[in-house]
Length: 195
Image 1 (cartoon, rainbow, N blue to C red):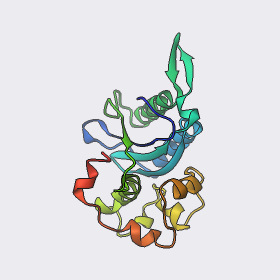
Image 2 (image 1 turned 135 degrees about the vertical axis):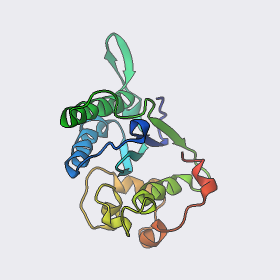
Image 3 (image 1 turned 30 degrees about the vertical axis):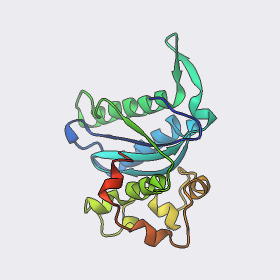
Image 4 (image 1 turned 90 degrees about the horizontal axis):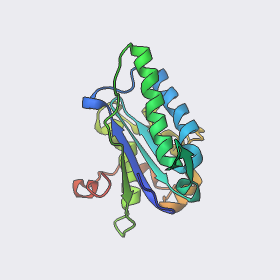
């Protein structure tokens, strides 16, 4: 994955063969701890949602995201390596838990750069990520899904994974209408610009 300073990216992946990647509540929490230790120091996370079979992150890259570190004699991007190590270490833990072997995730994690435009694809992506549990009919209200940043933005939880101040500024989120805006239907044509 190649990242550029000052850009937003929709990072997502799903279980191999669309299988589950989270099997119990502890798996979600463990994955978020891995996110904190492997990628949070390389970018700002603006939004996230973990689903039973896949995950989504909206990140903002800065100078930290571009740095490299030597690995096996080759310079590697810290953010790309962080994502790789997150998925690898999580897979090892799940394989041990479930007494399985092999890959848990699809081979290529997607990192879709969100273009800046008058259509506000960045804000569309932000809301799309939070709407996942509702669209999948896992909950009746987005705030009932515990494994997304939506509760934090609503003020129902004091999460520290997302840089909410940065998100509000970068995405021009109107916090007075945030809740209502979050439930607006997203035009299917706009999804191709964020997926």
